[in-house]
Image (tube, rainbow, N blue to C red; front, side):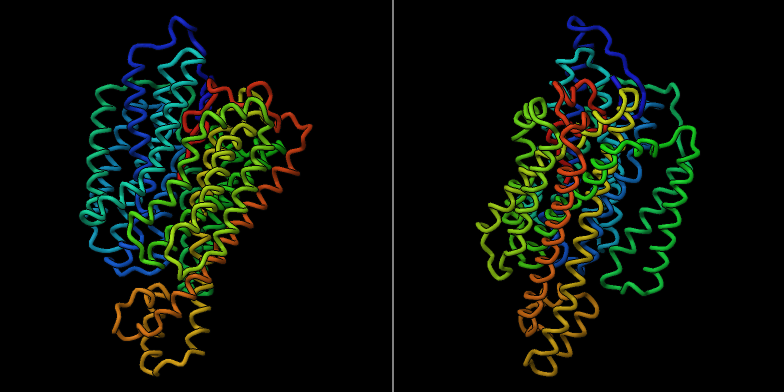
Length: 545
C-alpha cells in the first residue's frame, strides 16, 4: 500500500491477519478524532450571525474565522504527515486533539474577534494533524484489503457526519446558552478524543527516508498567508492600499520561491513533476476550482442566513444538513459508481449539479426568511459535492504510476483543501465589494433625512453594509437598514453566481480535459481500491467544509 506521505506500506498477511492487535481500539479512536476535527471545522457555520452581534464584527473579520482554520490545515498538512511518520501517528493525533481543546478554549473565552481568529487557527492546526494522523494510524493496523476498505469507509463516514451535524450542534447549544457554550462542548469532545487516542490507538511509525522540507514549508506557508490576507482585506481596506498591495506582492514572491525550492529539493513536500501528466493537472485544477465553489457556497449560505438575515442558529444549521449530508449518505452509492462509471463522468455531473444549485441560490430573495427556497439548491450542491470529492482522487491516482500514488493523493488532498480555503476568501471579497458599492449608490439616491444618511455613511465606512444592517431600531443610521439589506442580498447573489461560474469551469475542464479514451479518466475495474487510499485522503464521500 502506498501512503500519502510517499512511504510504501506492504500488504502484509492476508485474511488470517486482517485485524492486528489494536484494530478495534484504533478504529474507534480514529473515527472519534476525525469527527472532532470536522466539528471544529464546521462549527462557526451556524454562529456567524452571533459573532457579528456579540463582537461587533464586519464582513472580512467574519471571513477570517473560516479562513484561519483552513489556512492552517492547508499550510501544514504535508508537514504533519512527515511528523507522524517520524514520531508516531498516535502522538500526532493526541497532539492535534490537545491543540483543538486549546483553540476551542481560546475561542470560548474570546473577548474580541482577533482572539477568536487565534482560536480558529489553533483548531485548524489541530485538525490538520488529526486528519492524516488518524487515518494513517488506522490503515497501519489493517493488513487485509477488504477490512482496510471497511475501516476507511467507517472513518470517512464519521468525517462526513461531523461536517453535517456540527452546525446543528453549534446552533443547538448557542440556542440554550450562548455561542461560547458551543466551543466548551468542543473542548469536552476534544479531551475525550485525546483520552481515547492515548488509551486505544496502536502506535505506528514509518521514519525510513522521511525528513522535513523546512524551506518548502516556510515559503509555502508565508506566501499563502500573505496572498490570502490581501484577498480578504482588499474589498474593505481598498485594493490599492499599501498593506494589501505589499501582502499580495510579497506573497507572490514567496510562492514563486516555493516553486524554486521544490524543484531542487531532495524530499519535496509538493512534487511538481506530477503536473507533467495532463490528466493529473486537469483534475488538480478542477479540484481547486470546484471545491472553491462548494465551500464558497457554504460560506455564502452561512452569511446570508446569519449576519444578513439574522436568523436563529438552529435555522441557519438546517441547510447544512442538505449541503453536507449527501456526502455521508451517498458513500455506498458513490463507491459503487466509481467501480462502474468513469470518474471523469462523475466529476462532470457533480460539478454540473453544483452549478445549477449555485445558480438557484443566486435567485433567492434576501427579504424572504423562509428556508423552503434553500432545499432544492442545497440538495443539488450537496449531491454534486458527494459525486466529486472522491472522484477527483480516482482520476489523480489512476493518472500516475503506482509508486507515485501516495504523493499524488497527498497533493490532490492539499489542492482540494486549498480550494476550501479559497472559497470563503473569494466569496467574501466578491460579496462585500459588491455590497459596499451597491449600498453607497442606494444611499446617495435615497430620500432619507440628512442626519440618517450621514450616520449610515459613517457606520458603513467603519464596518460596511453589514454594520448598518445590524443597527438596532432607533439608532442613528438605522433608517438605512433596508438599503443595507438589499445591497447585501445583491452582493451575496453575485457571490453565488461566482460559485456557479467556478463549478461550471470545473465541469467543462473534466468534460473536455479528461478525454473518454484517457485511461486516467476511466473507472477501470476498481479506480480507487480502498487499499490504496491515502491516509490524508477523505476517501469515498468524505467532506471537509
